[in-house]
Amino acid sequence: MTVSLECGSDSSPMAQAAVMRTMFGSPRVCVAPPRIESTDDIVGNPRVAIIDDQPLNIRVVQTHLTRIGYQQFFTTTDATQAIPLIRQEHPDVVLLDIMMPEISGLEILQQLRSEQEFEDLPVIILTAANDSETKFKALDLGATEFLGKPVDAAELQTRLRNVLTIKANQDRLKNYAWELELEVAVRTTELAEAYREMVYRLAKVGEYRDSDTGGHVARVSRYAEIVAARLGFDQELVGRIGQAAALHDIGKVGIRDAILLKPGRLTAEEFREMQRHCELGYAICGSGLTESDANFPLPEALGDVIPAAATSPVLQMAALIAKSHHEKWDGSGYPCGLAGEAIPLDARIVAVVDVFDALTSRRPYKPPYSLHEALEVMEQQRGKHFDPQVFDAFQAEWESIGQVYRELSEVRPAPTASDDGAAVSDE
Ligand SMILES: [Fe+2]
Image 1 (cartoon, rainbow, N blue to C red):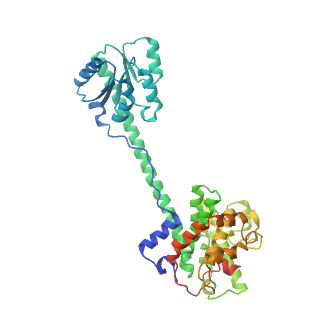
Image 2 (image 1 turned 135 degrees about the vertical axis):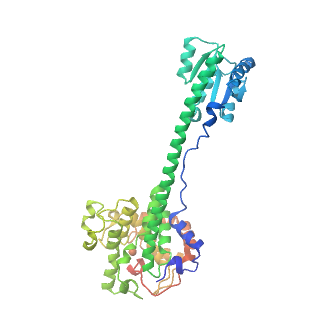
Image 3 (image 1 turned 180 degrees about the vertical axis):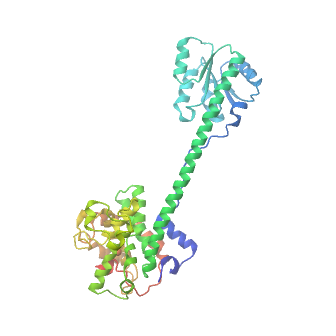
């Protein structure tokens, strides 16, 4: 038995990895929000920004705070530099004067609260304007505390400690949430990757049984993604059809060797048996999906051991593709003789790319067609075998299709004598 990854002209690990990437893309990277730095120093030695147009006021506050061990101060008397200073220094708390030339402390506060990064940053208003209206406005804009001037050292120190203790606790909670989110993202990525790999491994099982279709699964998978993207599928659906298409012929594992591996063309009776790979693939991937599928029951022998319906979206799509990828737009296909849009769109896409790959691949009974020859043959089937819209999308992506063809041609195995019963022999 010949398998593309192991018996092809290039079976190196790099080539195998390339095929996996080709089929399922690069592993996704989990995304988590940035972690908050250590909260240990927030209370003991916080980063304090002091914004006041009077240098003397800054010195007084700094002196009060130095006495309780604070050492990290970032100050400016230029109100226009307040926001840039805060952005650059990332203080743990801001002590902000209100009455300043050019920009008032309230405007600075409003600007800070409008930015997500600073919405929780403690801001203590220090001002001589002690009227209740200003105080209310400052609190309404999100001031954390409000202290009148002249500043009382003990009150400043106590309120600052309280504010910083609350901030430290908030940051710890945020870090905990961040760690949980990261853990979930990592596990989710691992699960998704494991799932993608399992689908690939299942597809590989099918290829083990089918000797001369090396690389077929990988190419069909990629071609289907390209056509689906052209048809407007969103990114998630494109990825899904890439995986689901890989399983389109998985039902061949249930076909007898005498049929599956027979050199040359099949007799009519043998071909009827080969056609059962659609039914078998449907059963393997999951059947009983909808009421309309009731006319395609799970084979009795499998009914007791396989759940009636696949729950994964990829397997649900794979089941429909496996069942319907040999249906034809004009109703002359198999197994149900469906026509037009009664054939699932995913299966109509795979029908086109499956035939293209069969035509451009070597078979015991034919050499590989050139890309140009394959297109000529397929154009005759537009509106007969193929959904015209899907075929047009395929043709519109001719350059990308050719690129995948060339990229994956190196994993094709040397021809052997077998008949895959795929598109060309199905014609
Ligand atoms: Fe097939």
